[in-house]
Length: 110
Image (cartoon, rainbow, N blue to C red):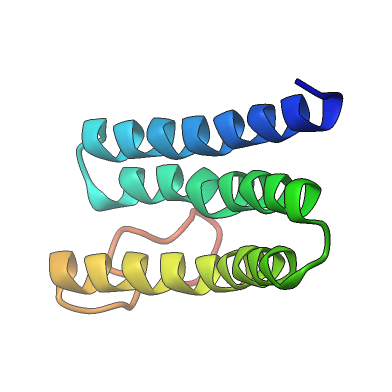
């Protein structure tokens, strides 16, 4: 196996391993807020590793460019999706998004 082929294999193992670890973290955590923390590596590290492996294997062909665009789309949309999910979970739990009585930090105005 060539060094480039070995690097491609390592990047794929990293990407799949991070995704599997994120899935296990989501399964193990008890509430939506804790689960959200485990989705980040699956949408940042894993796509970048897999896209890098594809670019190494295919160069900047159509497949390489598409892999980079998909990784970029995941990087850009993950914070928005995480925020929307956390907001929906809070509304479902408390009935509204605003700060509740007793939640404000000492020294700040509610």
